[in-house]
Image 1 (cartoon, rainbow, N blue to C red):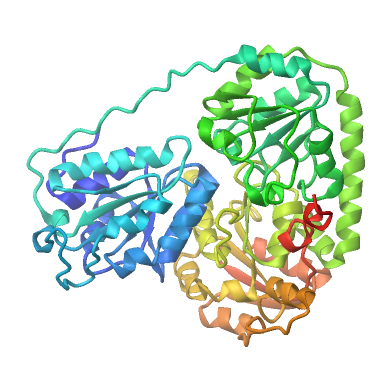
Image 2 (cartoon, rainbow, N blue to C red; image 1 turned 90 degrees about the vertical axis):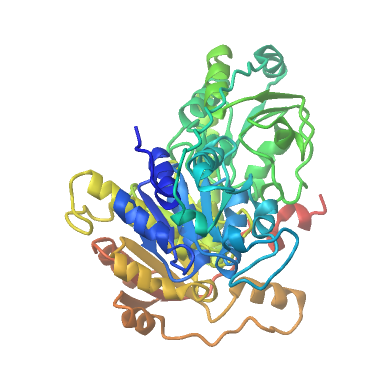
Length: 566
């Protein structure tokens, strides 16, 4: 049981400890220094970054890699505002992130009046309202413990997502006279109606499972796999659902629905079972996929499940628990061997498509699949190489791929990889090894796939990676600018404007931060050798790859349903 704190800063950190927080990310400011002191006293590792946006991205990367609460501690006004892009990405990806931002002293605030206090914002919490599950500004030091517990629990409660907690800076040093108790968490006693679901399944001859990030975050992989096998149904995963099943699962379709041969599975299905997905625009090609003859959804939020496609029935509840109950209840069908054979043919088709469309992407995917260990987390940015990896990389298991789809925030992967790398570091320490020592090759490592344009959004975080000795490899694909936007302009028949960038020598830049770096051309033998060497390093490194790639069919300018006018 935690001890009663004697001031607000200690109460805040005491609550974080109660929530299981051992690691947080932040940037110090004049208003939040008391949190850094309290965190040190409590044994919480507070990793300092070079920009507030990176603090939330890192918390997001940590949360996606672990399923635990990611925490970002930032300062008032502009410090808080700098996190908004990253917080929005966490919201659309369902990452449980707690943004703790100080605010101006409560003694200087006058409701409805902007007075010009240092870092003052008219309503700091209001900036976060559209991109968080909830916002709270603590009213007193006595309430800070309970408010922090409530905010953290809200972030972790399904559907998970970011929460904002504002703390007037004077409350951090204010005495706690009587700490308000944290409210007990609410139990979910909803009982899903399996009978209606079973009736839909009984009428279906060609069911399809469509599995999203909600299933992955709920740990529903085993239940999804069992349901698919009993129904002999193919499983198509969304970007956020990738890794929910192991790549050798007999029902897992090896690619995204943007490949016509895979999209055809949706078209021929007479029942789609959507598990933990809102059937978003990026995976349905802006809803050009037709309404299925029948749609059964499993989702913690009935409105979310049915907002894009009409559902015949929604099983409301935790994806793992509900899917497991459904798998237990459905009769087992024949046809699994035939399905497995068809999926093998699809796998060959997808491999041939990638090779034909972009041989360099095929090389990159081959090397990643053979060299990167299953324990590593791969994070991709909004860049052409990242699009190929996000859609077609062999993902060995849950929480081993992070992709900002989502908001599609350019510059996500590198700072988010800081958090995933810290998580990997934590696993090594938990196994009795010192940070940076005694690591098996690639174990717990983060691998960020970035472009030259997006990397420059947060290149200063090389200093963070070096200072913290993070197990992080950056694969930086340099095509001289914003390659995806250049593709859009060329294919629109207009001049390329704003997309061809003057960029530094990235290996020299990394070296200036004390980060080992290599430069190679393409994704052949030299790249593979550099990647193998990088995975054997205890600290951060960077591989700059000179290459220009064609975008994959999963990018919106190449959606086949749009091209066909569906």
